[in-house]
Image (cartoon, rainbow, N blue to C red):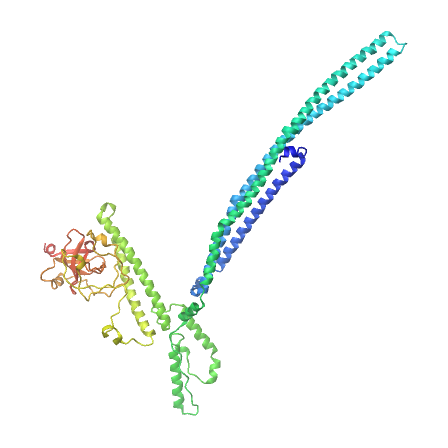
Length: 604
């Protein structure tokens, strides 16, 4: 199939066809461009829809139900879906629309060049044809003149009245015209040969070459339209997996809705913990004034007991009769609003204005929050202690005293957090005892005694003697000095390398135990009373930072500011053996955590 041979005489139609093809290419490009605009508009409207239906800050409490959580997840997936529509529009814009415009511009320029070449070849052929036509007309004119000259000579030769000279003149004119006719004939024949040759080259070589170029141009356009359509499909197909994930996420969100769980959440959220009121007593109207007043007082006291913690007792007045029930709608609404306000706001710091069940939930949330803050402060303190240890090991990296202020600040903040934690744990324990329907029987506990409350992460310690030469894993410390406090520094147990920094990454405790009293005694003589006869104290020390034992028994917990007896000084491994004054608990603590004063140094 070749336009040059099959459509050799359709130059004008081919020119129009290629023009229409390029116009169709522009039309398809405009279609894709408008589709991109629609995709972007669709994605934008979806994003606005998602934004408009995002939960407001005041609605956060309502979004704890499974249906609301599912709706929030659906909004998130819909936002991701809108993002994929934007990806489709952007890819179509960059991979199709832009390429379409560039291709249309290129095809227009190529078509113009090919048509100019074809017009040039047509001009060459028309010029040859024009030359042939002029040669033909010249030959025709010369032939007519030669024929007239011959006729004139024949008449002159037949006319006896003409002179010999006149006859010779006509004869010479005839010969001249005959020669001119022969010359015109030869010129016409030569031009005819040239024109035929030019025409054969035009229709067999030159014009087919131009038509072939136009054919290639049109096939190129068609092929690119095909590729653009396939590219558009591929752009859509690439986002299908993510769109499917979005739809799967919406389906998962819908399947996560649980009506029973929502029902339980409503109960947990609004349950007050009070018991239903008792029956109203019968009021005998014919009885004496004392009986009526006593019944009314009993009812008034009963109403106050049943609404305390939900509505204000001041709103409850003495019942005046049966008709007052129908005139107290406004008071009932006010009571419900008061209960709602108490449920939606924190109220007092200890939540004493809330019903028992709601008070318990608030206290549990507060304890959880304080535990998280304590853990964060412990992690921060651990990082600072690691930094200080690195600075002490390699002073070229920095001065250890630069982090001293931050360590003290973290220590003070942690003390305050622990105090708050103890306070709210006590309030929670009290709230738990109030919510319980009946107290537990102490005799039912193990050994018939109720154990003392202890934080789940508290750590105990055992008593015994210590020796640096003995196996450190078998060392234990005295009973009765259990510590539940989490070390700010997070220092762990004694490592094999013996470096105090090697224990800084140990397990952190989550809560603090009860304080051991005020250890900030400035009298050095207080440390001279409690020591073992076989291991006399060498001096005393003061804890600069808190330290938490790792639970193996070789190390000992200490509080920031606590004073301890020094039994063995640092032997080069970074640890110092100390004893607690009152409980005689012994163990090793990091040397960098304490400020040591030896009795020999004090004497000097």
